[in-house]
Structures are given as C-alpha cells and as structure tokens.
Length: 291
Image 1 (tube, rainbow, N blue to C red):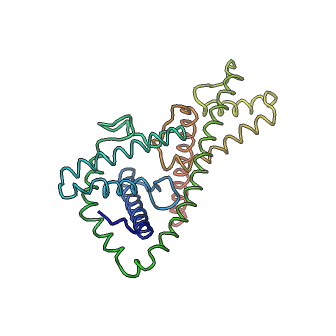
Image 2 (image 1 turned 90 degrees about the vertical axis):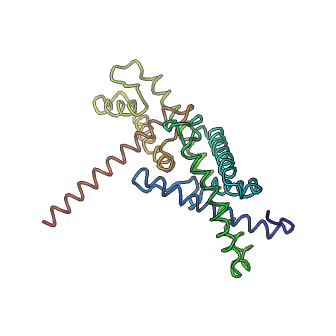
Image 3 (image 1 turned 30 degrees about the vertical axis):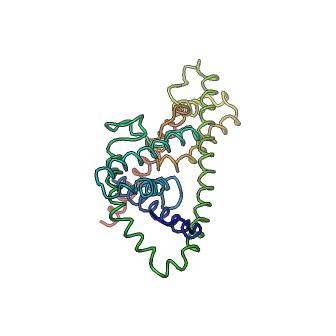
C-alpha cells in the first residue's frame, strides 16, 4: 500500500495516476466503440481525451482490493463488483441530476436496469487483473523517471487546472442540454393543446408535429403568424445544441423527456443520412469528372 505520510507528494502521484488511467480507459472505450459501430465517435462526457469513471475505477481497484492482488480469482470477482457498482451509481446519479440515462444496456443480455451488463462487467474484471499486474507496475516505473519526479507537482497542478476548466465547461453544456429537452417537451405540449383537433395536424411525435405545421404553413399562409413560424424555426435550430451529446451517447434514454429526446435523435439520424447522401453524390460527381 502506498505510503501516505507525505500528503502533497502523494496527492500529486495519485492525481497523475487518476489522469493516466482515465486516459487509458478513454482509449479502450474508443477502440471498443469504433470496432462495434465501425465509425469513430469521440467518447466520454468531457472535451478532453479522458473518462474519469475509469480513473476512479482503477484507483478503487488498486486501493480497495490491494490485499487480494495476488489472488487472481478474488481480484477478478472483486474488480467486477467494484467497477460495476461504480458504473451503476454513476448512471443513477447522472439520471437524477440531468433527467436522462446516458447509456442503456437494456438490449444486452444479463443487464441490471440497463445500467450495467454482464459483458462489460467481465471486461472490467479482466481489466482489473491486468491493471494490478501489468499496467500499474508499468505506470509506477514511468512516474519514477527522475525528470518526471522532479516536476511531478507542477505537471499535476497543470493537469488539474485543465481538468477543472473542462469539467466546468461540460457542466454548462449538460445544464444547457437538460434545458433544451425541457423546452422541447413544453413546446410539444403547447402544440398539441393548440392544434390537436385539426385534421392536418400529426400529433404522433414532436417531429411530425413540427413537420405538419411547416407543411400546412405553405398551404395556408394566414393561419400562422410570422412570430409563431419564427418560433418553430428557432426550435429547429435549437436542436443542434443536443447533437454534441447524442453523438457521444446514442443509446441515451429519458423517462421525463422521452418524446423530446426521440425527436432529437430522429433529427440527428436525418441529418446524418443527408450528409451520407451528399458525400456519395459528391464522390460520384468527382469520379464522373475524372472520366
């Protein structure tokens, strides 16, 4: 167990370990998701290339499970428990704070409320064993390099400042995203209340409601005021603020804002389809020009 009689030095070393394992976790998740979806999507909630949940999980394994480091089966099982508990709690806390389940494993076998699943838990267990016996010794050796030891505190302080700025910016975007969902929910309820009795109005989803209003506005220009149509257009632009999060967490779900979230997901899929179609046409045009 690391000696903690020198708080400042120990904290610097501990923080650098946290950053390192957060980065390693981010890299692993990038590879995992890229292979699974066959496209590169930047993972993690922060703007930087780290996933703090992996840093906390790694430190939890190193410190809480230290007595079991040489008993591979116990270490594996305990790593599964520690990391799965952390993932479950993180999912629950984020949902409580921001009214959305950011990842959902409901389509996976042996999942618990969609927050954790057996496949990931087994991977975390294997990762815990590899952490104790491969990654951590290698990282300790790296941190013991004289040049790094000399500037360890300065490096940790610099990274702490960058991380703090990233967290504050991310929190701002999270609050803005939650507010966007709330606005869409209220807007959908207002549209239903105002137009639900009209034959041309399609209340099946928020997307169909907005589309039907835009279509009918071209037929009956006097039915809607200019200000109202500008409001509808403003919501079309507002949904772009949600693209950042939906690209990172495509399986996101929300019991509070389900209709609004589905509308935003549909818009993201539609925009992506249009981009793919445009790219194909552009490629075909370039090939034709070369001939």
